[in-house]
Length: 464
Image (cartoon, rainbow, N blue to C red):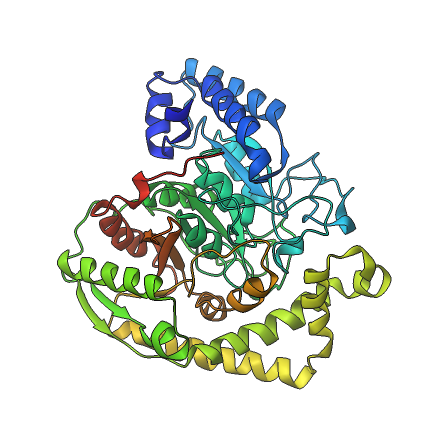
């Protein structure tokens, strides 16, 4: 069971394709593992073992009759519980939607189903993908598999925890201000926020329409690219969807990075904010490793991180309150304290401030993307600090905003968190790799080259 828990998507896929691994036995092993350990981590909000076994049996029978659907066939996955799965509740981890049963699959759910994926269940989130790790909700918050007394990142908290814990090899999350990349960094996995519009958001509860992205969490870069290949694509019914050719995200994997121009935004984490020493050292060491692999590394500068954060905060707060205004007026007591506080702040943003933020956003986006005339990808921090204790309210307040992820929701750029090592106490560290719009394949190439030169993704937590 332990060996099956750490199979990558690509490894499992090949074993399933060649009939060396039964999708049913694979699903059973992961179900048993979660049943044994998840009481300590709360990664699942709603496990779905019956559906998983039904999907696995279907996948196995299709393979036996020669109907192989591709590299996700028979592979387990989970969904953050703001993503619809027909017939199951989509609760957003909130009392507000406790009995909200989805009528249809989200587009990403349907694509994973069509690819032969095995649905394992709904995963924990922050309430409505905002707030933080809360203890006043109907379900407890997810915890970090590397140390269950610590936070696992959010808001796609269960997606990061379940992937890192070996409960499943791949999960869907969402990212409005960093909510895929935060749990990826905190849990030592790979998390991609693709270009805005690359993945349909239809069937996913919104937080802020102009900032929301659907993203992927896996334990390796190759797996992440495989998953994005499945879910990317134009959707005419999503107003933000990009109408252009998608796919081919694994095409550049395995190619060297000699001559690739990498810009490092170091001022984000050494001047605009002072990152934790171990985090800074891990990023600097990763940059040195990229240079050793042949990349042309140089420092670049952009607007101060605080400007990006202010822009993200005003837009997110305004749009999130617009989504929640009716409930906030009628049922404020049914929100947890953290989500209620964050959402209510949007009620006090003036229309002029919102409009000015959207204007500033365009200027900042154009200026940021102009950097790619001289570099191919950019590296910077994701989090400024390692995971903090989940029961330390002061640490939550202090560290939650100390990050450089929301900047790339403002610009809509593809941005991925990759592991860069561990603290002395054994908590994961990570960095971001960012590209110009629709350059995911190049980001994966650089990330894969770095990953293959380290052993971070081969290390796994010991569960309680």
